[in-house]
Length: 467
Image (tube, rainbow, N blue to C red; front, top):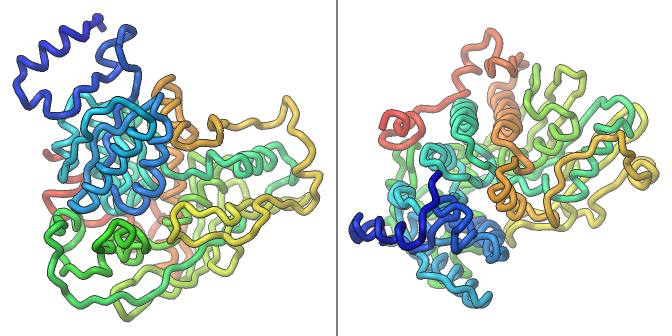
């Protein structure tokens, strides 16, 4: 690429009209090459709700020397203004020179601006696949909250596009960057437990309930677009997210969409994407999936919230390991081998104030303390180390170096799809055979039909690809 001076770049922008300068005039390093006046990564934040405000935006804001959030996007005007204030006040504290943060209520408009390097997506689950794919097609690097997608079909399409475009990718499965999770996987893969036999995963559940009575749509919310590719449904507060007179009220509660299957599959993907990801890391099955599944679960029959309640899933892998996922198991991942066990969890850590916590004070245990205490040798397995144990920094560093982050998009898809295969097993309540290479159930049309969902135009990846 030929070198471009700052003066030449600004002249081109001015010739392009006012629209070219509507976005903050921070020139991305990739445009100006080695002579760039700023090496900082310019980020668009899509989704400014609870997880975006409490985790993702702070994760990027604490690295002003590497990156800056130059624009925020949300369908709720109150959340959008809260996010703008949060970002601008943060940079003021760091004494960073920063243009006014741009605000958008439609991610498609925001993606049209050429001075973006990367996109962070912290939207509800049903709004992951479309903006992720659109950002990849626009040539941006991508951070997205877990789970990657709502369906197996979406996950395959998203993984294929991101790998084809070469985007630097990170999923919000921050346990990958936690030292105890990495060490647990290194120990298991180095044979400290002997032959691995069973992995037991404990996840919480969400309550039933929710008020289904239709309500007036708040004037600050673009509700038709919030529904996106999902079916038409009347607005009610318990379907979407909290409203309130002040910002504390707006982010204090877990939103209702987490408990409705049109927008989220429940804890099986909500926390399951975290724990199954770590299980796959330790099992060395990150690019495959189970071959046999059996599941059962209780599903609510009353109220608005219909994601699963108590459940039990067993999935067999080709390497002989059985993964069990159960709401009665302790929250975390327990690797069991011929020579002992390792249990790893978050302990008392919470991502947001309204998140459930694992509860246990000690987050890393083994049947024999020597399993953990004995240092790994040179010939043992050593996995990706996130700088300072910081998941967001890991992504920013990957963008700078153009080397992979701790989790690839295919790994994210495979951990998510394993959760979805388990969910399908729970829904059908019968033994299923799964071909992880073809990503299809064997001789079961009913199960295969659940790998995808209809997508209401003009939203969804099917309609995006047609555009």
